Amino acid sequence: MRKTNLPRLVEAGLQWVWHCHHDILLEPLTEPLKNRIAYIKKSKPENELKLRLKLLKLVKGKLPKRFIEAGKACNETWKAYVEAWKAYEKMIVRSKEINALHQKECGCSWNGKTILENKPM
Ligand SMILES: [Zn+2]
Image (spheres, rainbow, N blue to C red):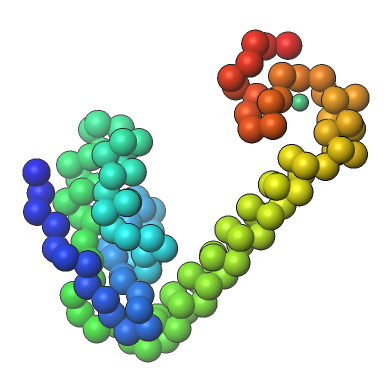
């Protein structure tokens, strides 16, 4: 198994990584690096694992301030989005009007969380 560096904080409390995702060169982490590594091992195709884990690295050098500021803004926006989405999902699930409209228009096996765990229509 590949030995990982201890998480390394950079300015503004952000950790920056190379190749956290296959199509993004550089980005700040939105959660601990170990979570991303575990996710990759669990979810990505076997033939991609070696390269993904090899190239996923904490940035060692100092980044220009404008990148730190932009990353910070993205992380704050992302956190706000996640919170807003959770509230939206709760609102939908609890709404009698929405559930009644869904029942009338769709009639599927939606159980409040998924369409996949019940019998097909
Ligand atoms: Zn439905």
